[in-house]
Length: 377
Ligand code: NAD
Ligand code: DAU
Image 1 (cartoon, rainbow, N blue to C red):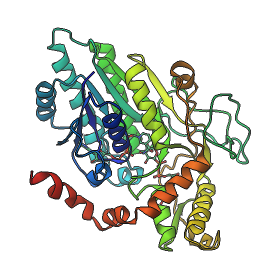
Image 2 (cartoon, rainbow, N blue to C red):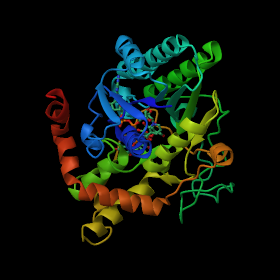
Image 3 (spheres, protein in one colour):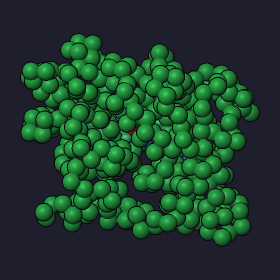
């Protein structure tokens, strides 16, 4: 496969996937298709924007005509689809935008791929539509062991010393979909459309559902970058509810490596769950962040614990997410490479060293990057 569209490449995970593909596959043409919503930031890709195999296309995935024409003009043979509205709190306030982009946008890409590939003599041969989804479609797991238990699995984990599970059940690929937020309902719906295009038309699809990602270039509305920035500036840390909710964290570059592997070697029609068996209660992670930021800034460790501020819980707040990624580990040999302690050190260090990136995002200046760098060309 030589000509690949990556949607949402200016976002958090997408920028890591674009960087990996542009650097690792110089003979592939990578087309980053992104609308540049508030979450899209081309400064995330400064280091690859001059490379000959990287092309930026400002477009809305809902714009079927533009996507279809791009596929024809550039002989696209693979799509890695990450573009989405991704923040749960925004979906609670504005569900329509989530249905539009996540559902209708995915449908528009599916239909463009189907019509274009079907028109070729070789049809589906060598083609792939890879849809990136989330573990949130499975709903919430119960927290049957609030103190934590040693997890009952032998596969590689990124949980390091912590290594606890907060219940016996995990999200497996065969679990029923039970989304709770408008965000996860829209993602679930898009997953169903992808599978419907495989089952009905034979489109060569693959779907993955990943747990919470963390790392550089994440928009500071999400827990980890928001809290790192607030601790730095000694602003309150708004902890939803009691801070007891559990999330399963994976370093973003490990997700990008999994996407590369599954795009090339995953079986058509299959679903793979991606996660590092790395469950943390929010409040525990917040304490790690405070200690790490304080230490790196030369403050006494824990000096900023009083920034923790318990606030009204998120509506419909899912209690626990925990991915079982043993299918991916067993069948394709993927493993998380980084332990959480290392990943968090790298992440905090990155945000502290890249204050200019953070200031551009929080001030809104990043939205002028496109006009400055691209529109004038
Ligand atoms: P993000 O919000 O950081 O980035 C989304 C990108 O999509 C942005 O660049 C935005 O401009 C672009 N976009 C939005 N609407 C668009 C449209 N209509 N047309 C074209 N581009 C559009 O998101 P992220 O956190 O990087 O997530 C990427 C994907 O991974 C999403 O599909 C999300 O559901 C999924 N996912 C995220 C996580 C996570 O922890 N962040 C975990 C599992 C799965
Ligand atoms: O599980 C994968 C999902 O992870 C992705 O599909 C989503 O796109 C991504 O945003 C993320 O969803 P979460 O809702 O889990 O992430 P968020 O960073 O918003 O919140 C993490 C946890 O922290 C969650 O339990 C809510 C809590 N939280 C979050 C914020 C922003 C707070 O307590 N306070 C906050 O200010």
